[in-house]
Amino acid sequence: MRARGRVLLGAVVLAAGCTTPVPAVLPAATPATGCASPVETGALPDWADEGFSDVSAKIPHVLGAGGEIVAVLFAHPLTWERTDGANNKILWVSRPAPTPSAPTGVADLLITATLDGTDTRVTREVRGGPGPSIIDLPHAGCWHLDLRWSGRTDTVDLVYADGRAASRGG
Image (spheres, helix red, strand yellow):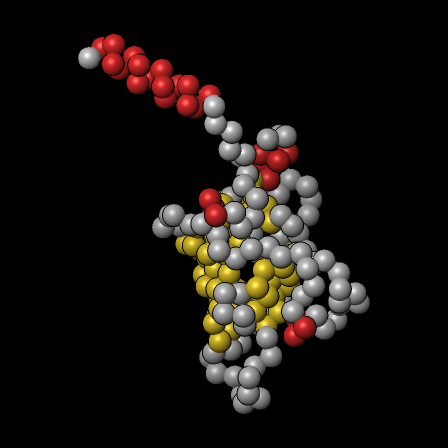
């Protein structure tokens, strides 16, 4: 039994030595993170490009799962505990409402963010509804954001990298 244990341990060590190391920070939207919303770098959707001088520019953004909102990332990657002096600035652009009727519910953009694979949940609010914001979240990882504004809803997944690891070169 003891010899078999050594053979098994040797096989595990050998297999571990043959694998490619996993980076400390996974790129946004990889299947390993659980994030389903890819960061796109093409042109913004037509309904979201108003006010941008170069509508063909490659602007990092994440489209909501329901297609009702887009998060334009002025800081990419988004980073937990930024050490570079920048902000996690996100411009939230809502698709125009399908009917011009008066909005129901809250006008502010309410964000409930849940860290993938945990019970960690925080809320954030963007006063006045979708628009410019700085959204800092308490940990690195994939965050599932449930968004509510003016009687509308959508969801996005955003990856926050570890800014401390980046500043240490790791």
